[in-house]
Length: 435
Image (cartoon, rainbow, N blue to C red; front, side, top):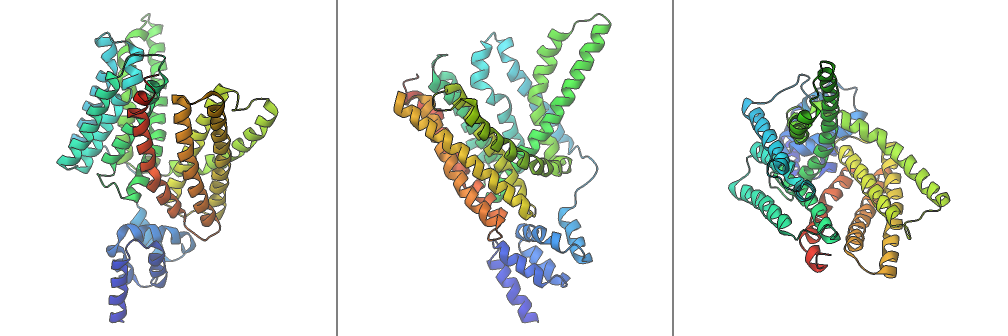
């Protein structure tokens, strides 16, 4: 028995990333607390992932219930973190608001400032927060700070040309680069950690929920405040929007980040529910929309505005697919939910194929422009990614694979989008002569 235990422990140590093996070991030792503890201590992340996948089918055991509470226990009370962390967030929020206020303080053209520097209002402070929490090394800190510094210098030294599509694309894709830089700080510089990358995607979903709640609460407070002051004859709208709102808006995602990181239980159960609700709803909406297009008389081949909306729809649905998969990868997924995700990904591929064929048609008819090149490149990358994800989702739905593998595929592919964003941001303006 002792030899068997030593052999099993040795296998678990040498095959840390094999979730299937961990599942088998857990099932074989459901009535062996000591061996379960050894497995857990050998590879805690793999043990937790395997156990959470098995638990729905073994809820009746008191031992598995104990392990479920141990692995997934969350505090019910709200934590405000340490005083240093809270002070950091307050100072960062004030600085973010001050940057947002710069056009008014320095009499800079608002449109020019915000179109080029909107990302620098929030992303540097989010990165600083994660660098602070993760205690990034000096080299990693210099890398993150250098990326932001280079980005702000580059984008503001581009020629001022409101008619330049390549510059507009550079500004838009710079936001994506800043998002990736923040992700680098989030994953603690561990670029090859796929689980950390998935965690970053989940964080973005949680942050979206929390920030929306904060903005809604702020909107209610704004309405009540303005209404109360108007009742006593004071019109404070200009002052309120110039100082309170302009500082409050960039503070919302910073506060949302702080709350989600110190209190994961606040939205930890909301985001999966939202993903489960919206996945089938979006699937139905998308199918109805595609059918309606056939009777609308519109098509993306000749209607430029419709093609833009079509591509926006594609990006939005793809984001929902990826977010749903990221949420699904940390919990057990029913077969019905896996099939819904597969069908949603399949329909999204159809949407992507239509958009891709439309942009190829427009390039063949009217030539290559910065916008068409950007859309062609991004749609091609998305199409490849969706094909890969859909195949894996089919395997998961047919019980030949695991949803976790789908999440890893998404995480593995993220650097491809980063490289494309670099190309559009830093090369397109020069390749197309700032047109």
